[in-house]
Image 1 (tube, rainbow, N blue to C red):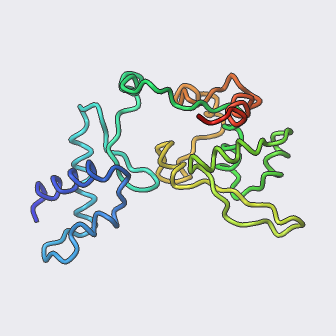
Image 2: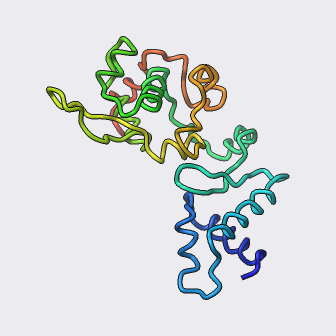
Image 3: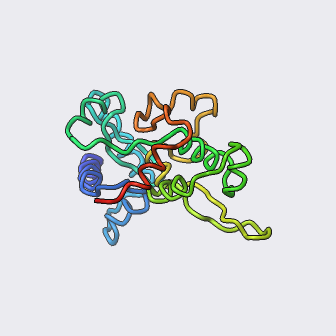
Length: 202
């Protein structure tokens, strides 16, 4: 299979998938074919597709779950106007909880509370789980066997990370609201989160 054809196939698959595609799933596109590309050929084709995007409004990005096309970050404020519904906003309390889980995982709720100095709202934990940003990965072998929380591939995908090694230094989290405006850092105690939880569903 020539390189141009391989690029076209991968481009079509990435556009049709609707979710990140790992290399392993791309290999399955060619299962049983005599001229199936090897993994190096796939990576070369992906690199070429990425280079094709250089002057476009979207990019090919590798995240935790695989490769995907996405709108460039610097264009999101214009593209976001296509949708009237505003995205959910998250408080500083939610962000701090998520950051502690990301940087100290696996970690218990009690350990998070020890660092933050305040109780962690059950709604914060629930909302992070519903977003598929955190999950229970076990239980600490102490009285009560508290749940151990860790981040998910969904967390990596949302924050455009291939792995946890790409997490920014903690000092850079001061500017997270500029990168992700849906994080409402003017609500340090998470009152907006708790109000949302108390609000009856439509």
